[in-house]
Length: 159
Image (tube, rainbow, N blue to C red; front, side):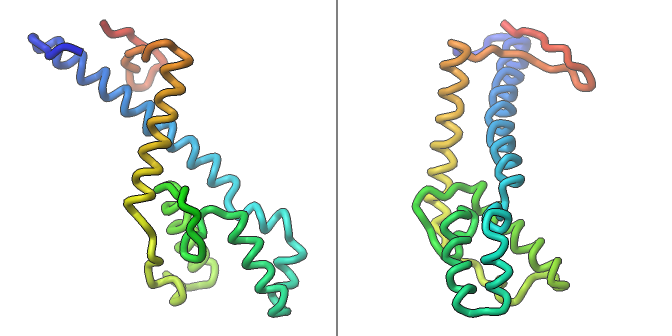
């Protein structure tokens, strides 16, 4: 894209860029929403094992292994190398919600931050955003630039 030479071009290119950023963020957010509905699915898949873990230490160890293997957000116990910032956000939300269910602001066992490779999470997230963007480009051939009027569903094509 060429450098703008008029105020109109500045505005048009800014709106176009903002719309691209909106699309990229919405893609990540939609994946996070799907992920949120899958949160702790192993508790629904293996409910008897979870129930038994409450009263039997041998089941507790087995449950933890099953749960950690099936839930990417438990980065405090196992890091697989493919964690994203979405996994970290899910982990933090899980801590707050689990603590609230237990009647505390933050459960004392969770007050320390696990050793997480935040740079790796950021790189994996960047890769995820780039792959999603590449998929958008493949489907459309190009990225359609548009502005959505607030409060309406009207899309206005930009030059």
